[in-house]
Image (cartoon, rainbow, N blue to C red):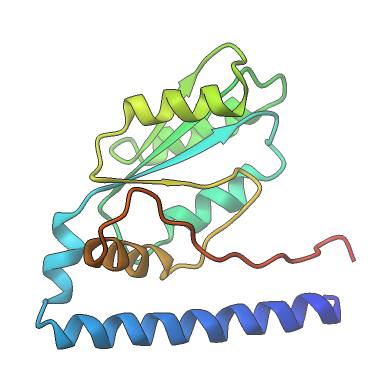
Length: 165
């Protein structure tokens, strides 16, 4: 593991811990039980996929290993020519109530997002790129923050990790 990756990974975990502690403290100040928030709000997670068979496992595992479980995972295959659909179908069979694959002719990234949004049934939408992954505690903090603000769009921070070195 490169030094840069170790440093960024440590910063990511430290930052995430601070955000989560702050969010949990805020929840307790508001006297909102954790279970009440976590169980009642469904989030739709959309992942547009195009020729990402090599990366999609890590992305999907990071979402499926969330501590928050009230979500649907919609993957829109935008005309992949590799084994992307085969990889995703494995997850559809393993998690039939959670994971859904929509296949379409190539419409580009925006077209895949629009297809995913049309199929979504959750209160909130979260878009994740197929070559990214999320920390296991990120969605509860995300939903709690969404419940506290009045906004149409929320952008979250990200960290870049150079895995090629």
